[in-house]
Amino acid sequence: MTELIARLLSRPGVAALLLVSSFVISTLMLVPPIFVMQVLNRYVAFGVDGTLFTLASGALLAVAIEFLLRWARLRIANSVSVRADDDLARKLGEGFTDIRLGHSETVKTAIKRRLMMDLDVVQSAYSAPSINTVLDVPFTAILIIALLFIDPILAGIAIAACLFLLFCAIASAAAEKHAARDRSSADRPAIGPIQDDIVSAPAVVRAFTGRPFVLHGWRTAVRAQQAMARKLAHNRGLVGAISNATTAVTTIAVVGIGAILVVRRDIDVGVLIAANILSARAVAGFSRAALVAGTFARATQTLQRLRQVEKLPREARSGAMLGDFAGRLTFDDVTFAYGGTSAPLFEGVTFTLDAGDILIVHGANGTGKTSFAELVSGLRDPLRGAILVDGVDLRQVAMPWWRTQLCYLPQDTTLLNTSISDNLRILSPDLDGAALNRAIQAADARDLVARLPAGLETPIEDNGRHLAPGERKRLALARAMTSQGKLVLFDEPLESLDAAGKAAIGSLLKSFASSGRTIIVCSSDPSIIREADWLLDLDQKPRPRLEKGPGRKGRDTRAKLALAEAEAPAASPAASPAASPAASQGGQV
Image 1 (cartoon, rainbow, N blue to C red):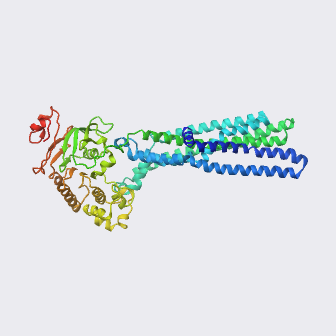
Image 2: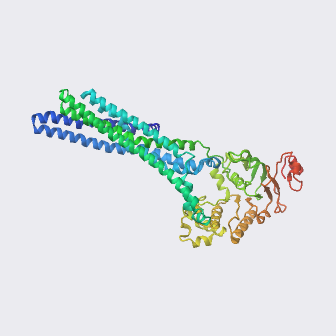
């Protein structure tokens, strides 16, 4: 209820209108029982047709007013959650796109998907009918007070029924919360990954005779999901059955005890019928509340999980923008480790690259080449030390600006599920056709685009997994080429490419070097390594070794490597600039 109260308080004028209309509607609900009493006591007793006409006209007018008020209240209640639902969807989208990569990885993909889908649960819980149902409950007191004036015993029956249904609503909410926790339990098989295996990897399943394994996992996950769905449906059906039974028992009790009172002449038949109508309406309000209680409980669970996501650190959207980035990059004693690991992936990395320098980062699989690229791109933060761009700590820089300074080709060539044109323009939405065609040509992707059914407007599906790896790489390279950034950052650029694609990468790197761009390439390919001014060897643990590369060619390239004094003798003078006098005195080589 906290969220509902917050939504109502955010729109005080609307909340006041809803409360007033609910009060008036509850008051108008007294009209039918009053009409019954008056007809039986006045018209039946005296038979004056004019009296019946007057009573019926007044009752019909009250019913019409009640209907119009309910219609107007429904329209008003719709406006309560429009802004809140929009804000919730925005926060969820921004949360998953802005959370720092290392923290985002701590949230399971299944939980992210469930949160996305459960937005419908929140919207349903705080829809106009649900809000009105909750607001009707306190004004049921008007009907109970009217019953007290008729007879305290009959009122007591209605009160007991309402309290019982209130208990059922609380129990239903508790059951929904328990089911939500059970659904999130780590012991339950997750159906999402199995769905991905069946839908996205059928060839792998068949080629490696994985059908029995995958189908067993599918049946297990589906059975668990179906069991949970049946349990929830049973609980909701039980609440409905209890509500119906409570209404019936209340009617029997009111009519039975009322009949005794009629025989004793404590009340008349008209009053008995009116009391039955009042009690039925009072109980109906609580019955509806019991039915929506579970929905509110599920919505509360979703909101709690969302707030946990909102607390995770986010990437900076604001910060310093250096204007004309010169291309100077410095790693100052940078150490990186994944969360939950006992040892860093690498530590003590220190160097400075000036505009035009070429650094090749090489090493075996799993040594941290992609993590290094993600550090440079600002997707990850170092555990210790600092990364400086033109002397400014990268953590103080506005990330949207920094990304425009990069010509970035990640190893993971995931595409967005939109058209190829939109994918290539994502960094520069205003890119004109000529510039886009140049980027496509530079990436050797012209033939690929030409043979697609709708060319640049061909939609990407399944994040591009329907394309060959080399085709995705070419499109990702074309996307990178739409940037005029002065820092080129390529991660495994030759992976999945044929000879023509590799030749295009080679030509691009030479073009970048001749234009004075700073270049960082993460690759162990010999054809890439021979172009290096500097080589960073991530195979050397825990402190990677920085050494001069074969492509230095006498340029005035400056770089430095800080090694622990204890490790200095292990590096030969020829292999490490740390042995030079300038390095030993804290200068740059």
